[in-house]
Image (cartoon, rainbow, N blue to C red; front, side, top):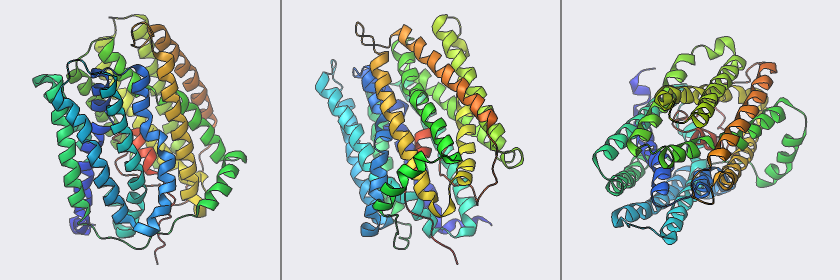
Length: 445
C-alpha cells in the first residue's frame, strides 16, 4: 500500500493538520491561559475546559441531522459557523483592555461555548464520513498517518506558542495565536471541500437510543463495569489539566512560554509512548497497558502532592513529569481504543460507544465545573492550596482503586478491529468526542 492509495484523500490529512492547530488554540492551553489573563477564576476555568464535555450529548443528537444534510455539508456548515466565534477572543486580544471587566470575561466564555456547541453539531459527521469515502484497505494507513500528522501539529503549535510568548507581550501573543487559528479554520474549510461527499448517512433512530441506553447502563456486563471505572476517573481526572495549568500560572508564577513548553513535552510523551506500545499491545493484551498507565498516573499525582506540600523544592522536575503525564494518557487511550470493541456487541457498537462517551464526558464536564467551585479561594480568587492538596489526595485514592480494579480485569478476545480514532494523541477529550456518533460504518461487499 504505497503513497498512491492515500493520494486522493491527501486533503483530509492536510485538514487534520490545520484542524489540530485550531483545537490547540481554541480549547487548549492558550484558551485556558487567556482566560486566566483576563480575570477568570478557577470556576470559570473549569467551566471553559468542561465545555467540550458538556456538549457531548449535542453531538449524539446532531447525528439525526445527517440524513438531511449529508456528511460533507453538515461538517462544512458547522466548521464555517464555529470559525466566527474565534473572532471574539481575537477582538479582545486586539483591543487589549488594561482592566477587563466581567463583561469581557463573560463574552469570552460565551465565545468558547458557542465554538464547542457548533463544533459538536459537525463533529458527529467526520469519522463516519471518512469510513464512507476511504477504501477499506486504506483506512488503517490513513488513520495512522492522521495520528502522526495531528500529533506533530500539536507539538509544533505548542513550541511556536512558547516562542511567541517569549518574544511578545501577552495580548499581542494571544492575538497572533487566535488570528492564526482563524486563518487555519478557513484553510481547513477549503481542504474539506476537496474531499468526495460520500453516500447517504443512516443513523440509529433516537427512540432506539432512549430504549437501549438505560439497559446498557443497568444490566451487569463487562461494558457496565468499564463504564463505572470511566465514570470514577472522569469525576476527578478531567480536572487535572485546566487546574494544573491555572495553578502554575497564577500561584507558581510560571510564564506562558514555560507552560506551553511543558505542555509540548506532555504531547511528546504521548507520541513516544504511543509509538513504543504500537506493536506490544497485541502481544501482551490491554490489561498490562491499562495497569502501566495507572501506575504512571499515580506517579505524577504523587509528584504534585510533593510539589504542593513542599513548595519551591520539586518544581525543577516538572519537564520530566509532564513527559510521564503524556505517556499515561497515550497508553490509557490506546488501551481503551483496543478494549472497547471487545465489550460492545458488534451490531450496536456505535450506540454503546456513544452512550459511554456521552455519559462519561458529561459527568466529567460537570465535575470539572464543580471542582472549580471547591478549589476557589474566596479571599484571593485563586486556587486554595489546602483545597488543591485535598483534590490530589482524592485523585490518589480513586486512582489506587482503579489500579486494583484493572489488575483484576481479564483480557477478552477482540471482536473485529480496534476502533481507529484520528488524532488521539492531541487531546484526551478530542479522542473521547470522536467516538460520539450513532452512524454505523457502511457494510463492505
